[in-house]
Image 1 (cartoon, rainbow, N blue to C red):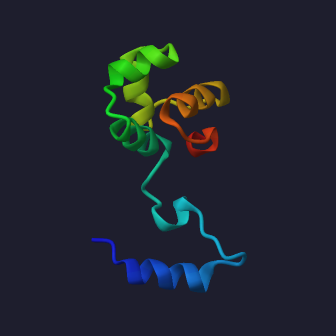
Image 2 (cartoon, rainbow, N blue to C red):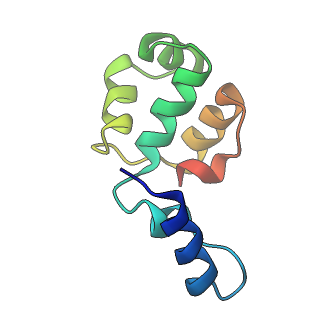
Length: 90
């Protein structure tokens, strides 16, 4: 279980510029986790997201599971549909 006090301590002690990347705090997370979480927030199925960005459901599944690379153009389409910045997926 994540202890927020530990996270605050880590951020305060390790950050040179006052910020810490998501990867440093949660090394097991990847862009696919962001897709899954944002898709859930938007109450969208993999099939619905796939249709909106012009790929197959399998393609979305592979991105979410870290088995498929997300190129910049796909990241931009995802960002538009999922209401975020494309940099989240790169």
